[in-house]
Length: 201
Image 1 (tube, one colour):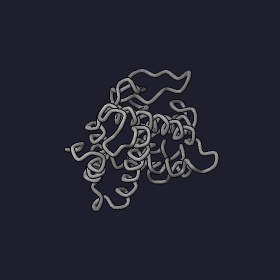
Image 2: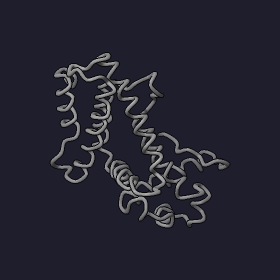
Image 3: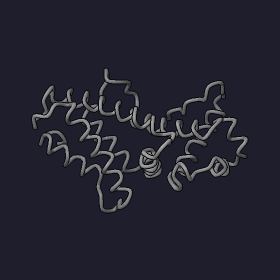
Image 4: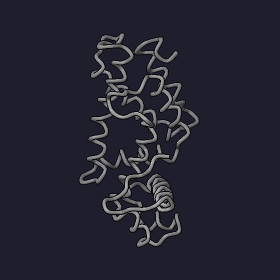
């Protein structure tokens, strides 16, 4: 299980780290239900049996807790990969989509924060801006590893990367609204077959 980042100057042992992970999971649930702006530290604290002051011992601010939520989500997706030197394969990308179809709470949290992040002065806006830059870059590396400098369609990996990312995130929104009617893995595989009929075989 990935460990949420520790706020500067805050140190905890194994028991404290487990408590931090419990708090992050509770925050995911509260944000998924209410959105970031509607979520309160008091509501998160109540879910884990702490006072708000007790929660602040682990996360000094709501923004620190938000960063931990977003970081945990990214670490689940990235696994042991680190950077462009070790790009995800196309098969691993499909695996992420398949895993997401079983992670309702975290996908709902991510989507709620993504939608809210475009509003003025939202604390997640810098995170998502940098995340999308990184994800597009990493996706281009994945596509290049699979097809070289030109995909079967003639697009470059850099041209195709934003489209793949858009499909992945767009499918999540559709699935959240109608999980019984949208099969994310099947739809993503269908999209990949538009790039290359052998890609999702």
